[in-house]
Image (cartoon, rainbow, N blue to C red; front, top):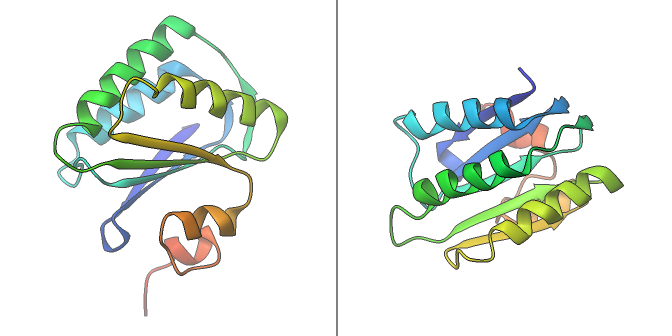
Length: 139
């Protein structure tokens, strides 16, 4: 599946990874699964890794519908939701900037685009230096 997620409860983080072709249908299906997950809750930080994307299929009406659906989940409580889009290529940065603008009407969602992995982790308040470290089980 081109979109996957992992809820890291010990970090208060959801790691979302896109690979290959990014489509709204895959995004919508994956988010619907996430929204039903028992560990899904407002205020979880989000790290959206767009670096492995090689193609983007835009569907603007579905994107706006998806953002409204996400807003319902993210704004279900008093906590802010920090979303970091990790994008390092012109096309993925453009996609992230587009999504960033779509969050403007929602003040409790704090989105940003970052190019460097270590910086993204630091902004999210994580001590690890790489996503691999974040994902590895603690010993």
